[in-house]
Image 1 (cartoon, rainbow, N blue to C red):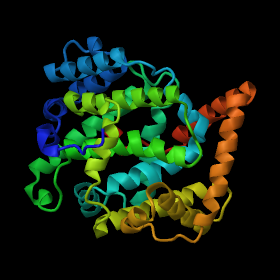
Image 2 (image 1 turned 180 degrees about the horizontal axis):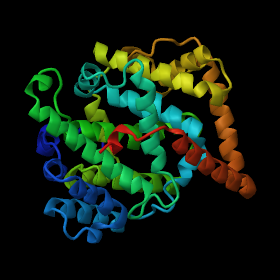
Image 3 (image 1 turned 30 degrees about the horizontal axis):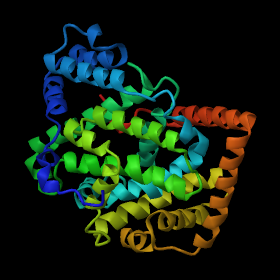
Image 4 (image 1 turned 90 degrees about the horizontal axis):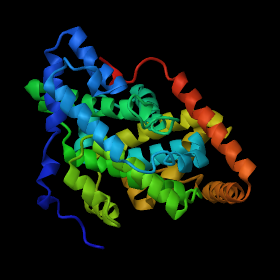
Amino acid sequence: MNNLINQNEWPELNEGDPLADAVIADWTKATPEEKNWLVEGMRNGAHSIPQAPAYYHTLLYQAEAFLRSASFLDFAAIPYLYASPMWISVSLGPGALLHTYTDPKIANTLVQSGKLVNEAASRRLSETQLWLLKLLQADAWQIGGSGYVHTLQVRLMHAKVRASMNKNNQYQSICTPIDQRQMVHTWLGFAVVSPRALEGLGIEWTEEEQKHVAALWQIVGQLLGIPSRIMTDLARDGCAENWLKSFGQHKPCLDENTKVLTRSMLEALGQRMSAAMKLPKDIAITLMHGFTRHIHGDALAEAAGACDASLSALIPTYVDANRYHMQRLRQDGSYRQSVLTQSSMQINSICAQIDGSAAYQQN
C-alpha cells in the first residue's frame, strides 16, 4: 500500500468536532453546578449524572463504548515504560511536536496567539508531557482513569477554543480554528512519528508490542473525536504511514512560524533534559537539535529550524546504549521488572511535579 491518501475524498477533514462543539455550547450557558456535571460524568460514568444535558450523555456514553471495545490496553504502556520518561521526552519533542509544528495552520495559530513561544514554551511542553504520561499510568484506561479523563479534557479544550475563536471575528482574522485535518496531523505525530523515533533511538519493540501501542493510539484518536471512518482507515495495515506521507508531501518548504516554534521547543526541552542527561544546558539544547536531525533527517530538520549539527556524532553512542538496554531487558526478567517499576515511579513523580492545572484542564 504505497499510494498517498487523497484528502479530497475525506470531507470530514474540513470539519470541527460537532459533538464536542455541542457539549461546549451547553456547557457555556450552564450554571457552575451544571458545568461540574461534565467532570463528574468523566470520573464516575454517564449514569452518575442523569440530570445533565443530552449532549453530555451522548459524548460520555460514546466514549465509554470506545473504552469497552478497546483491546490490549492493559499492555499498551509497557513498551513506553521500557523506554523510560527521558527517551519518551525526546520522542515527544524532536519527534511528535516538531511534526505537529510543520502544519502551517497549527504553526500560525500557535505563534499568533503566543502559545509555545518564549517563556510559555516550557510550560506548554510540560503540559503536553503531562497528558502523554497520563496515558501510561496504571489504571489509565478505565472510566475515571487518568488517560481517559485527560484525553476527553483535551478534546473539550479544542472545542472550547473553537467556540471562542468563532465568536471573536477579530481574533479569527489572524488565527483559524483547528479542524480535523490538524487533529489527524497531530495524532500521526504521536501515533506514528514518536514510536518511529524511539525505534531509531534504539528502543525497538516486538511486533506484539507494536500492536499494543497501536491499540493505545486508536482509543486516543476515538476519544479525541477523530471521525470513525478516518480512525477505521488509520487502523488498517500500512494506512497510517500513507496518511503521514500524504500530510508531508509538501515538506520541507516550511515557514518561519514552524522555525520559531521548533527553536523554542528545543531550547525548553534541552533546559529541562540537562539534569536527566547530566549535561550543561547549552550542550543539552544542542543535542536536542541533533536528535531532531536524527529523527527527521537533515533536510526537514533544517527547514523546521533545527540547524545545529555539532553534536550529531554523539547520537550513535546513545543508540547503541539503548539497544544494549533493550537486549538486556529481553534476557533478564529481574532487570525488566526493575525498569518497569522505576519508569512507573518516574512518571508518577513527573506528573506530581507539574504545578497547577494544565490549560486543557481549566474550568
